[in-house]
Image 1 (cartoon, rainbow, N blue to C red):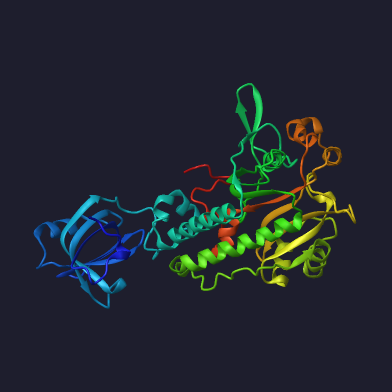
Image 2 (image 1 turned 90 degrees about the vertical axis):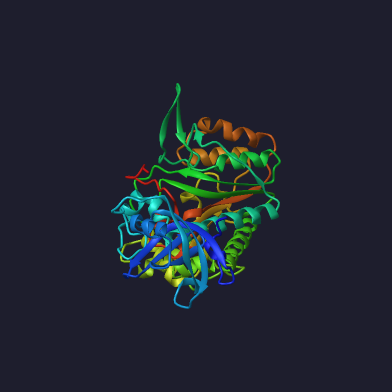
Length: 430
């Protein structure tokens, strides 16, 4: 029976391993192969005068990245990865790889991001890239566990919708029988409707679609959003929830993904503090205006350059709070003391925004007026507004970008590295 490479120790007398041929070297009377599976890399040492003829025939035929199964004697050696090597009694080629390869899995020859994404099945074989998705998997597992432990219900909402969920125009239209429909920007309206349903605490992790014509290293047109909504809560309540989630997720990765972080060169995952700084929007604008080469004033949105300037000043995760009501979505609750600002927030990494949230407006007539104030028609939101007539509790929530969370946690330079098959302005395959 095949044994995962990580579990092969010098204490074993014999083992069968299976995986891909990572590297090969032929020194005449001695040949070396590095065999790689998901768990690690192991050296197979072939003394040509001491192995069966079938092994010699196989090693002549095999190519890099071919899939092989090898059975043999395990020996301790300090020079080999993991302090052990396998001397083969059998060497079977399960699937031979064509040559040349579209990219170098051993990472000795660098490849451009487009080349890597075109051959993503090969790219993910690279230990560094595989580490990203092992970390991402741990992030998702920790997120689910945290939210279930907090008493949340997992919901699934439609991705085919009849109207914009956030009032924007960046929508992907689709042909849907005789009707006009779009791909959903967010589960926002539906998770709010579940507050009227008495669910009280819901979350969804799923795809969102934005038809924005960005071509940057931190934007995608299809992304994964971690969304929550909580009844009988205000913005501060859900900010504290988000703080706890971030700390839990970072700690889980630090505890369980040390090898993967090492592959990525991350020596300190910088676990966020329990309580993150709250930076009012007005102060954020002052910081950006002080150091920005471009003019920026109160009421402007924060662009990439401004976020970078503020992030350098803050130095770690932080919240931007007290946003102007005029520049936030219609469902954000205005502040009772000063309605010109609202109970909205963004969670920021020094490099970029990670999450956006707010206390929601739960009063029907006020919500209708706020929809109108954004130049939208309440009639187009009738399905959303209806629950607000029949007992909608106060509630708050947020959405957290999974790819941006993984990107910043792993120190990646391009968000496309944090998703298996990215979708952007130019890429719809593979």
